Length: 214
Image 1 (cartoon, rainbow, N blue to C red):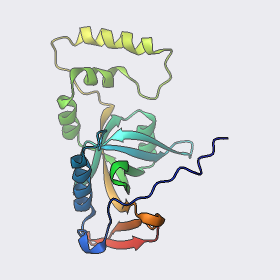
Image 2: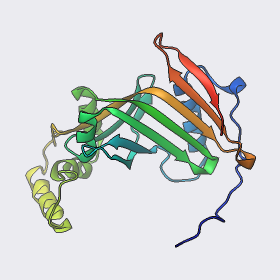
Image 3: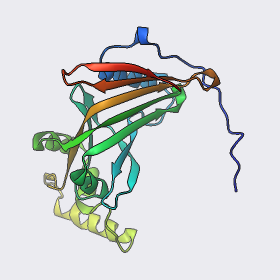
Image 4: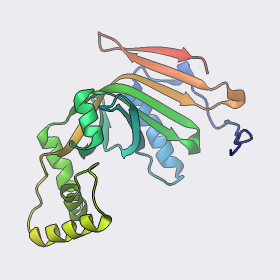
């Protein structure tokens, strides 16, 4: 067994106080997102973990790239016939999490996922490089395949088929908009007395703000 009990780090880079936060979690998320981006530690600041409940009743998480966020929520794109797509169709309750190690921050978002409009999905798909467009068509995501060669050969066929032609978005590929119901911000602090602030959506469209014990 690998003993990791001595893996420790003191968190001392920042703090999260009620006196400095906005009333809306999206505004705070925007602030944090761009602070991490400006920190310049490299990596993909928009990488997030998306957790769903599968058809077998087990939770499953995977890293996906956030492509847009606004007051309406958080958007990512995927194959609707993938394991995650089928899980969301059966149970739209999802959890998104961001861990920005370089600034000792974490954000956890509970919400409801729904498909974006076809116009939104089309707009993003059209912005992708041709290789990514063809990859979305050739890959029946989460299906069992005989080999990688199977995918590569099918990709070559599609490259010839669509050479010099517009590549349409497949109907089984598009966006999900996650409408947040609860957003928790975590800031690492010394002595494991971390700052945790939770925003909970209210029926009057306001947000209840609470501090949680670390």
